[in-house]
Length: 350
Ligand code: NAP
Ligand code: ZN
Image (cartoon, helix red, strand yellow):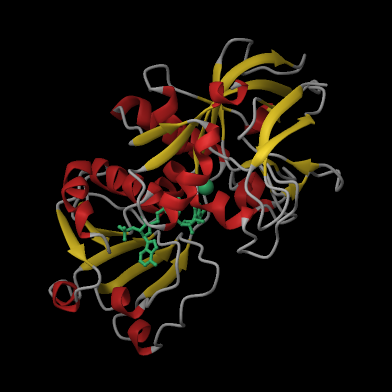
């Protein structure tokens, strides 16, 4: 069985520490992948700390994985040894329910299998993520990485990328639409790049005045200080779509007031506790919608990667050693990420 060197959390309060475990022997439809890079998502931190009250330990986090296929099962058709491949937030689903048939495996009716912090479909084996040297994944959950992309900077596309690409496509961000991105972190900065690439008028809402220049460089047409009520008021009734990526509870009314008729506020940020419920009249007047979105299915994730290949879009990253993960989390909690940490897996070997 492939032996994985990894970093794992043993409990909600312990720091990540070295951990060794066995991956499964590749099955006929599996790809064995040596992991080169893994992005650091705020969800990793939520789950290590048991913010969502569903954590399973030991936990090897990481769901923004880029690596090299080193072994393929005999039934694998799309990949061969040596290919550069990627794995995102899910590694299995039932394949038979209406959602899976519609290529929306993330909404599988019997529950998709997240890349980590879940039991596999056998109900016994814990899934373990990408802060590790090797992973074994079913071919249908493995993606191709366009050859022109920088591999470390492509890793965050697997979660931050698809989580913003999917709702921006679904709610048709594009020419003639005014789109807002709330929170300029890992997800938010990818949202800005995609909304701009799709041709929308893009505004960033930030609590960090120091990020203004970066927001403009990343593609925003304007930057709004979300803590400044006067700045917010200037944009009343003007947005077609707002994507909220914030990892902490906050007032949604402030954003609903900025939507125009039939506008939508979509939540992707998943804080530890709920936002206060918005006022009903803020939805009724203007026929507005409050929605949510979860990552994306495999087909759309491949489409997103191919789009990034054509448009040369990747994440702005800080490459770190796995030994520096605790400092990266500390900075993440202070909204000080420029704009995604990515772990260089070479560092696992010391
Ligand atoms: P991140 O890099 O830490 O960015 C979050 C940003 O939100 C911060 O940079 C900050 O931006 C803003 N923010 C944070 N705390 C805030 C506060 N107290 N008040 C106001 N703004 C605050 O996190 P991420 O990796 O992008 O993830 C964001 C959230 O999305 C997390 O909750 C994560 O679990 C969730 N997520 C959801 C999905 C999904 O499928 N729905 C997928 C991945 C992640 P400013 O400095 O610009 O204000
Ligand atoms: Zn994520």
